[in-house]
Length: 204
Image (cartoon, rainbow, N blue to C red; front, top):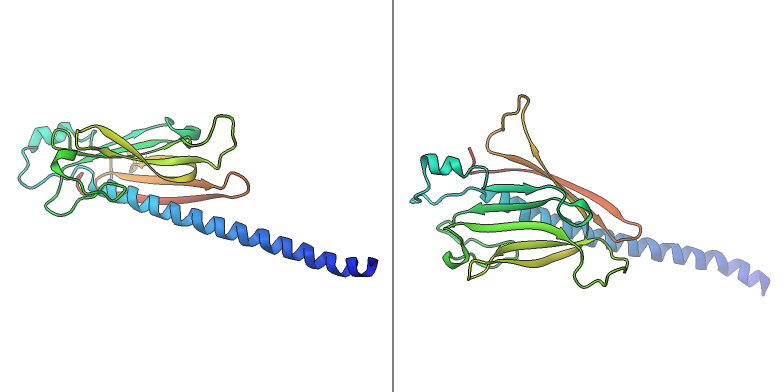
């Protein structure tokens, strides 16, 4: 019996370690997929910031007066001190979608502008005091009454940091350049950092 246990124990230990590694790998892959999807959506919104339809009335001085409103960054307002982002733009001639894939139409604008926002909030379904695996990434856009609506994109977000990059001397590069830093977690062992840098296309 003792000899059998001595032989079996290492196998059981190795099987347990392999199972833990497999679970960790699967969780890491899932978090990576979520992070990449979030960064793609935020990058798409940033590139749309400040877009004006060719026939728009917002030209010249009026356009310049709104240059600080096309992209707004709010520091430390979300879960775990996360930053949030709000982007505004007009609709194009093609198919415009919000951050959850719904089509943007004229009745989903305010003063002719579509809104797309990202923030991290505490998981709504988690009771107070209960341990959670990070916060939830929230997508914001306007509904058909022009009201800001929020939809949960994913959970497992520990922190979202948004930094605007400037050239030496304090002048912007071409357009505006934002570095997005997303920290994903399973709430236990995994903490992965994902970073991307995006430049606007319409804010010259």
